[in-house]
Structure formats: structure tokens, C-alpha cells
Amino acid sequence: MYTSVITPESTTFIVLIIHTMEKRNALIAGATGLVGSSLITQLLADDQFDKIVILVRKPIAIQHPKLIQKQIDFETIELMKLDFQVDDVFCALGTTIKTSGSQDAFYKVDYTYVVNLGKWCVANNVKRLLIVSAMGASAKSGIFYNRVKGEMETAVSQLNIPQIQVFRPSLLMGNRTEKRGGEKIAQVVMGTLGFLFAGPLLKYKGIHADVVAKAMITAAREDRKGFTVFESGEMQGMGK
Image 1 (cartoon, rainbow, N blue to C red):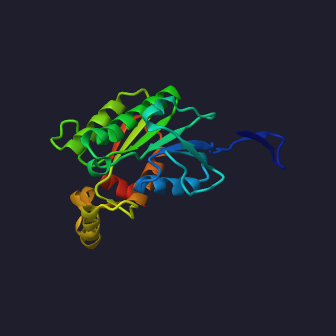
Image 2 (image 1 turned 90 degrees about the vertical axis):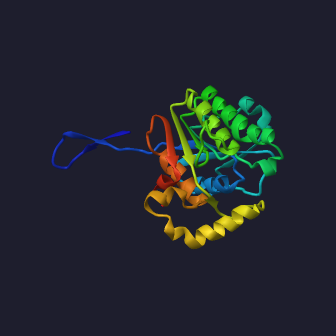
Image 3 (image 1 turned 135 degrees about the vertical axis):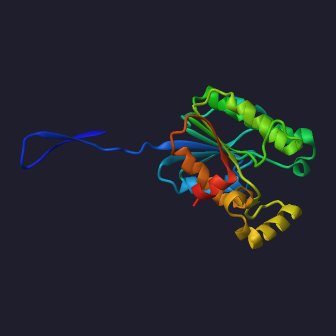
């Protein structure tokens, strides 16, 4: 925005360039998980974001003037309609084989739903797609979980979206609503011995969901064209 100002000393017009921060609209998929719920809290408190859309199967108990709950069938996510432009899509979709019940069901959530959300972004001119993946993600991995995450990253990287940013956290720290016994034990151990993970080992240190969410929002503010991957250690610094 340009504003003309006349100084008392002169009739010369001095053009002042005032940078105004444009309001943005965001969408969150996977809003009920550890990272997704933190994204809701942080984005609702962020003045730069005007509307926050969350995709849900059924309404959740959060009310806010900026929050829009969009009930959808994730099987047909590509057909979703909104009556306003979304700038940033934050994808925190993810499950486990145990929770989903089978490898096929896991693949549907962690690959198919995510890639189809990316296709929706292309069709709706979304500027940025930010995705929670996993440390060790690789399409060539011998571990099924990591291989699916890697295949998802490869498929999404080929979509025509100006900015695609992938975040690979290590062990996620935080209070889950679902019980994961082994993960809970690992969190306790990491909380006690986390100080040992420094320098080259930082990427293996457990990372709190709030830190991951903050890193995603920080990255969304930056003009990073193309496909970018953030490892867990890098997120530790971005999310402070």
C-alpha cells in the first residue's frame, strides 16, 4: 500500500512504502492428532491467518470465530468444495497398522488420503502444502511404514503445487488420546535421557508435537519454492 505524506518543511511528496501483511486462510487435515491439534491452537492465535478450516469426520468440541469445521468423507476428499480460497494446507494425517487394522488400511490413510489431498490442492490453486511424514521415510526402505511414507513423499513431490514442504519428525512427544504403550515408554525414556541427543544425534531426539507445529507454521511464512524436506533436528531449532 502506498501513502503520500506532505512534510512541514517541503511541499515535496514523500512516498512511503508500507508493508501490510496479507491475511491468509489455512486448512488442516488430521486435526485431531498430536500435531494437528497443536496446529489448531497455534493458527487460531496467529493474527496472520483469517480462516482456519479443519477436516473432520464428526464435529469436535472447539469453537472459535476463525474456526470452520468441514465434515467430509476422506474417501472423496478430491471433491471437497469451499467458497473461499485456501492459501496453506497443513496435512497431519497418519495412523498406525495396529490402529487401522491392516497394512491396506494404513496405506489408505497415510498414502492415498494424503496424495488425494495434494491433488485437491492442485485443483484449487493452493500455494503451499505442508505435510507431516516420518524420520527414515524412503520409497526404497525395507520397513513397510517408512516405505509408505517415502512413496507418499515421492508422489506428492510430482504434483504441481508452488511450495511443498515435508516434515520428518522423530519420536513425537505429547499426550495422545489413544493409548500406545510402547510409544509411552519411549517418551519417558526420551524425557529422561534426551539431553544425550546433541550435535549429529539431534535428529534422533524425541520432538514435541508443539515444536513440529511451530516449525510448520514458521516454514509456511518463508518463500521456499519447490519441494523441501525438514529433518527432525532442523525442526528443533525452527520450533523454538
